[in-house]
Image (cartoon, rainbow, N blue to C red; front, side, top):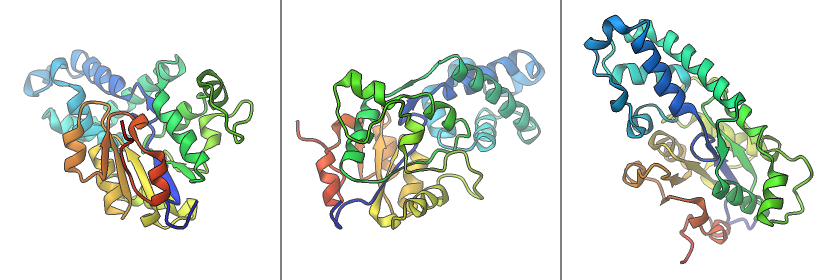
Length: 263
């Protein structure tokens, strides 16, 4: 890479690289609790299955570690004694999401795989940085060699059997950090392990808290609005917001810019 270009690309996993079942697991596990163990307090909450929307997930829970996400959801729905109930909710969600992952109830986003391959071809080191402790379960099941063959893509760094987990130069997903997003600790750690200055890195995020974390760390932020939440990511000060990573001009990365591909 030229000295003026980005020296590191840092990717969130859920919602960016993978259409994960996390939102489904959070929603269904809360519904199960409200219909069984917590039925007695259900009428004292603002919860209903219809109110647990994708927008609630994106604005309240997405990008947060498991316990923080569980507490945020319970507080959002005004569940009594939320602090005492958070462990039960987080544990039930974790059991459900693992079952869904093992059942193959997820898929990689093709635009994301095309983009990370193009980023690597441009000579930019890459890192996976997700708050989720389940990220590795996804990444090790996604085969880049078969994807590239299916797409007709040829890169000399793709070898038989290459998984997305093995592809990254650094993977700090699922580590325990003192502070979660929007604190930049996770992204600063990723930049450090790539051997790059934070100011020379860009972060790809689908959650406002992740965009805020990138900006707090002095990094460029590429907001990915897969849920129609362009305004939310723009308000978080993303440098560029797209609905597909196919819309990003990869050539601009060598100029240390995030730009939209010309139509």
